[in-house]
Image (tube, rainbow, N blue to C red; front, side, top):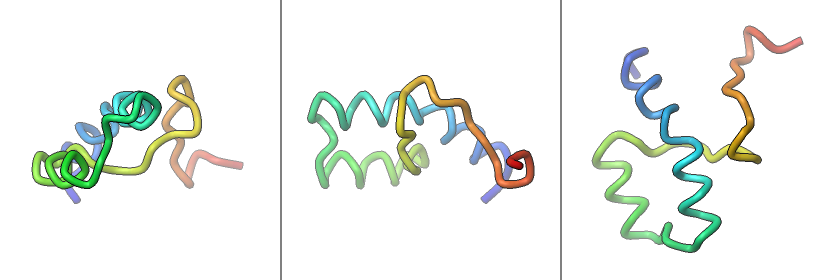
Amino acid sequence: MKESKRTFADYYVAVRALAEEIGVMNPVARRVWKLLGIDGPSSRDRSEPKRSAKHAA
């Protein structure tokens, strides 16, 4: 995935977490997010910073 697409998708980590929390993320919503290129892993906490493996440790 291009770096710019990854960065764009990373902006939505908090939004995905909120959508999960309030119950609006369902299979249809997940497909739409994937089609829009904003899908990805959810963070444990909405305030959790983005960390990469190369910066850890």
